[in-house]
Image (cartoon, rainbow, N blue to C red):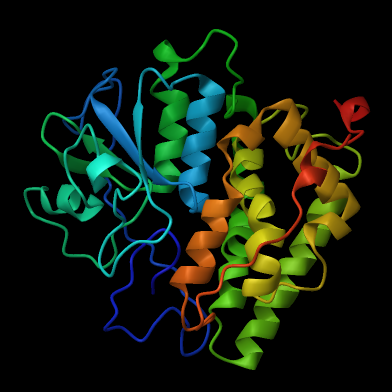
Length: 320
């Protein structure tokens, strides 16, 4: 089943599943590492990170690259928010071609792999080797960790330690719960094919959001007293909540702006760590409302919500 990180062919049945939504979980396992054990050593300027600003999974990589100061080390290609029937496309670039890779579609880089890419869906984020023009990996779970652990030599001097060794078990435990019930939970609501599946996903989503609110009421960050990958993984879903998930995916018990703790936490990250500079809610809305035509047949994109509240004081400094 497709989602916002993948493409969906027009000949398919669409995004809504016949029952509960099941996310595609098969990704290219190769990695970019310091020792180059998979044939892809860490090397500044060699790899191009291809993303869409609409996709929350890609947003994790955009955020991590930004926080670690790797912008001059890893170039980034940005696909447009509305892909065609079989690939994310570089329609935002002059001539609708990525200026570094020289291709109009991300699918071209997947097809350049020696064995091709027989699996369904062309996903973002993806690392492309500029020396061969082929996708190296699209495993977004591992990619974000590898930015932290494998690219340390090139991170800015004051970069936060997003995956500290003494907190890794707790970060992964919290992140797994967030992924299952929140990151993926909004899709299980939006793509549910039955009332029962929708209601089950809805209850899990808001139960977990209540749990997160309780956790964050007395601590500034999700794990320990510092920003970690747990926060990076949660935040793209919160950022998209009112703009897409509340209405489009029927996650409508409350808006983010009506959940005081989570709203203050999200504003804190937006302002304190400059998460806002990595966020384009116009592209988010353009993607969700124009792509999921079985949910939104007209393709009409809403003008709201008002985003001025993101810059209002959050009052969480005393929890730091």
